[in-house]
Each structure stands twice: as structure tokens, then as C-alpha cells.
Amino acid sequence: MFKKILIANRGEIAVRVIRACRELGVGSVAVYSEVDRAALHVRKADEAYSIGPAPAGESYLRIDKLLQVAANCGADAIHPGYGFLSENAEFARACAKAGIKFIGPRAEAMEIMGSKTSGRRAMQSAGIPLVPGSTTALARDEAVKVAAQVGYPVMLKAAAGGGGKGMRLVRTAQELESAFDGASSEAQRAFGNGEVYVEKWIENPRHIEIQILADEHGHCVYLGERECSLQRRHQKVLEEAPSAVVEPELRRRMGEAAVGVAKAAGYTNAGTVEFLVDRQKNFYFLEMNTRLQVEHPVTELVTGLDLVELQINIAAGKPLPFAQEDVHLHGHAIECRIYAEDPENNFFPSPGKITRLITAAGPGVREDSGVYEGWQVPLEYDPLLAKLIVWARTRKQAIARMQRALDEYFIGGIKTNLPLFRKILLDPGFCKGEIHTGYLDHILGQAGPAHQEKSPSKKAIPQEENGENTRLQLAAIGAAFFAAAGKGANTNGAPARNGEATSAWKTMARREAMRD
Ligand code: MV4
Image (cartoon, rainbow, N blue to C red; front, side):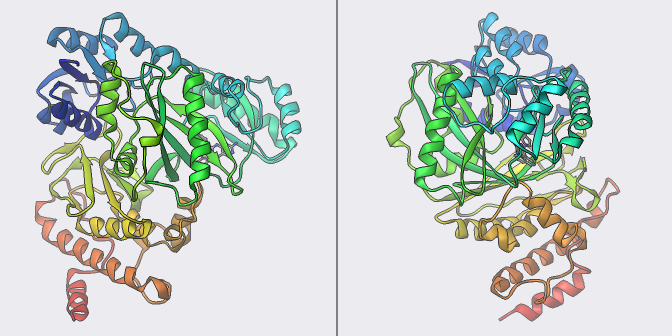
């Protein structure tokens, strides 16, 4: 086993990895930029070293500095977390060259998946279902031909793409040429690679991904799916496991396809295979994420496994300690990603000092956080503050539990997207599991931005949702109460969050009225 693991990351995921190290009896080493000197991951690690100025390009992305720290402190492995260098093949190679184990797949496996066209070619030859389209980058006139073959509408996608950049929906042949140029130049700007290919457009698909684990001895298992369809501008907001639409037979077929993907790429360690699932429940390989993902906790809660511990053991050369038939899913898990962003201002990042932090706890509640009360959230990085995750026996109970946990949760001093979750969890379509990749925009559009939400009336809330109605009112009372109480402590000049109720007096009166 490793003696010491350097965590080349920050925030909640660095804390998550430190926890796994502690349980394994492995030393943990944090690194931090100038603005992260007092960050939670620095406080929790056994050792911590400064790696430079706030911009990630001068700190968390500096391969040379990270390897220098590892050498100086005697770390024998590096966990990259997610984001930053986690899917950087050059980093994986540099670690191997320095004799430090990279906790993740080999550089070659990353490279296959780094290009969408090469990923599609590898999957096609392994017999994995793909969205119909091309498996090579195309010239503009070739794109016109392929689009006519697969049939409109089509999507143009950047070969080097991700996160929706360089992607265009094209409904007719007339639009294709200018869309091609737009996608290509956007891809060139974003990735330094203007290659574009064509896929058939799938209308309102679900985004469902399969977690896999592969050891270095040829064993590979799938750990069920995560439903990740609730996204806003290609940023996931809420994830759950299992998916409301995946039956055991579909899970087995998608799981076996995902294992096929991993084997075709010579993949080792933890990975995720993303699929689009259409309304007829056909599934199509989209891409593979060669890292531990933000939403891994929902898989941990339904499988009872510790994915970070397993990653570390796999990297240390141990065989998987169980086989596919030993993997059983139990209950339902939901994760809410709590971001420092302002739902009243188009989800603009809202960094600043956290003046109050009251977290949720109790049965079935887990919180993976990277922050603490009194800490200044820097503006240089991803605004993810914490993940609130719940487990319960059924989806319905998990929704009720998440509503309860959200009612308990309070962050003061900065704006967060917490009001958005209260809205999602009350949405009748969401509660029925009827979601797709356009559904969150639908929720946001239909009722207007969160700040326009008035105290709930019988008219706005369907009859069968009256139980939830009470919950929303309780949440409003909590929010108003703390907003009023926290005003004096609000040091950054931002108005306290009280958008869900008009005044503390009014909600106190409502609380009186609700007493039985
Ligand atoms: C698609 C699609 C429909 N048809 N491909 C968006 C980001 C990229 N990773 C893949 N994306 C999509 N590809 C075809 N052929 C719809 C999307 C898409 C989407 C996918 C997953 C999660 C959220 C999404 C939101 C909008 C569009």
C-alpha cells in the first residue's frame, strides 16, 4: 500500500480523498494556492504545501510544481480528483516517469477517450451502440453528405469537445454550412482544435451514466447507473441512483456495454461511461469520463461501496475484492450540488465570506463539503461549495428526505442555488421521474426564476402536492428567520437571502397559523 498520497485538487473532492486516506492509514498531502491557504482541505490533510498564485494555471495545473512537492515530501501516489489535471494524459505520463503512481487510468486509455471521434471508432469496433453519424472529423462538404445520410435534424460536435462547446443543432440542410463554420471556429477557440463531426439528433434524451471499476488484473465490473439529466448549461445540478426509467434488464445491457467500453480502451481504475437514452429506451454511447466524478456518492450510497478506497487499492495493484454478481443495488440516493451562485441573477457566481453555515444531518443524510463558516469562498475556481446527498429505501422517501435536509440547510453571507432545489423537489414531473436533459430549463422557464416565486397558494400547487406545500412554507420560514437574524453579521454587503418570504413577521404569523 502507498505511504503517502498527494491530492492534486482542492475543495470538497480533496476533503473526500483525504477521508479515504485516513481510513486506509495512508498519509495525505494537500496542496494549495495563495487564496486557499485557509481552505478546508488544507486543514484536514496531514501535510500541506503552497504551490503558487490563485489562477489555476499557476498552481493546481502546474505539473512541475505538483511533482516537486510529491518528491520533496515523499508521496508515492497522486490522486487528481476531478477537473484540473484529472483527465490530462501528459500529467499521468509525467507521474509514471517520476515513479509516482497516478490514481486513475493509464495515459493511453485517457487519450483514446480524449477525442470523441477516436472514442467513437474504438466503441464501434467493440460493438457498442453509438448515436448514428460519423466516426471521423469531416470537411464541410463531407458533413453535408453525412447529414443527408443520417437524416435531419443533426448535431455537429467538436471532436475535442465537451460541455456543449462547439456543438450545434442543425434542423435543415440549408443551415448546415454556416453552423459547421460556427461550430468549427468555436471549437478552435475553445480547444485549439476545429475538428467537427456529425451525429443524428436525439430529441430530449436522458443522460444516464454507468460507473465502472477495472483493476489491473483484467477484472471489470459495473456499479449501476446515475441519472444525470437535470442540468443547466451542461452543468449537472441534481443526480440520482438508480434512474427511474432503468429496469434490471436495461441496467444489465448498459452495464455490459460499459464494461465493453472499458475493455476496448484498456481501461483501469474508476471510470464513467455516459449514454444518451431516448424515449424508446435505446441507449447510445456518448463519451467516457476517465476520472472519479462529482456525483460518485449516489453510487456509493446504493452499492455500499467506497469508490475512493477502491480507486486507491486498484492503483496499489490489488485485485477487485468482489465480482459482478456481488454487486447489489439497495434503495435510492439523490445528490444536490450546492453552488455559490445567484439564482436571482442568472446563476452568476457569488463568491464571498460564509457568515453562517448550518448543515443538514440526521438519518440517511451525507454532506461532502469543502467549506466552513467564516471562510471566504474564492472567485477563482468552480463555485461548488458542497454536495448534499441523501439515501432512503424508495425514490419517494429519498425526495421527502432531501426536502427535509434542504429545510435544515442554511448558508448565509453568499448567494447559493439552494432555492432551486426546493423548486425541483416540488415539481410534479420530477416527482414522477419524468425528466430529460431539457427538463430543468422547462422548470425554470415555466415558473420563472426562483426569486419570482411567491409564497405558495393552492392555485399554484396541485391538490395532491399539499403535503409539499407545507414543506415549502416551512422552508420559507427558516429562510426568512435566518435572513433576518443574519443581517447584522453580513459583512460583504450582499443582501441576505430572503427571496422566499416577504417578511419574517408574516412568516412567523403563518407558523402560528399552522400550529395544531
Ligand atoms: C446530444 C444531444 C442530442 N443528440 N447528441 C450535450 C453535451 C455533450 N456532452 C452531449 N450533449 C448532447 N448531445 C445528440 N446526438 C443532446 C445533448 C445535450 C445534453 C446531453 C447530456 C446532458 C445534457 C444535455 C443538455 C443539452 C443537450
